[in-house]
Image 1: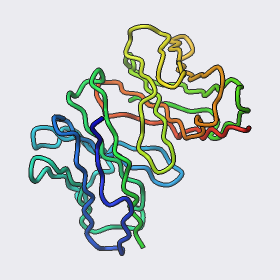
Image 2 (image 1 turned 180 degrees about the horizontal axis):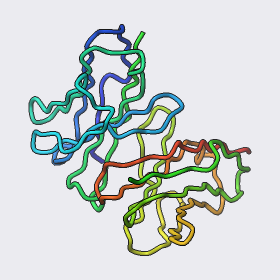
Image 3 (image 1 turned 135 degrees about the vertical axis):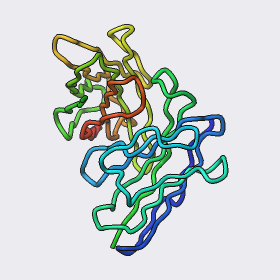
Length: 115
Length: 113
């Protein structure tokens, strides 16, 4: 079965550094998402992306965050200047359609540790 | 706005016993409700979803959930726990029928032999 692939599985970075989290969604999917889960807290929606544009974003997704689909296969989340509170598990997800009748597939996540 | 509350952050059951995980929702519109499972070092996997069809929803691995509007609940059950059910379980809601999901805090299930 096709999978959403996220790399790396664990990334450690220093506060203030830029970090890029990478995801390869399922190949025929059109809708892409990032979620995050701070340790011990809820999984939170960050952003949805369709047709090379952000469809919706949460309050968490401020100017420090950006997303890009640079080459038609990868979907990246960039944090421009990381803060300690950005430490979390980041999940990428994709779906063929936007509605809930189309299954949403999650990757295994990237654990980001900001020191 | 939509939200879910999961009652109990940790549930411990004996192998073969009933698994009951509680989820209550709050939504100003008819909700779409989901249960996801997360095994260690893995992503979220859909167990089942309610999309306004049958109120009793059957999912994978023997799990089912019942949508009760009067109680604003969507509790997850499995009649007989298996060791492989040890994982973290998340209830989630969408009010728009899309994947801007609001998740609960999660319930960790441990299964005793």
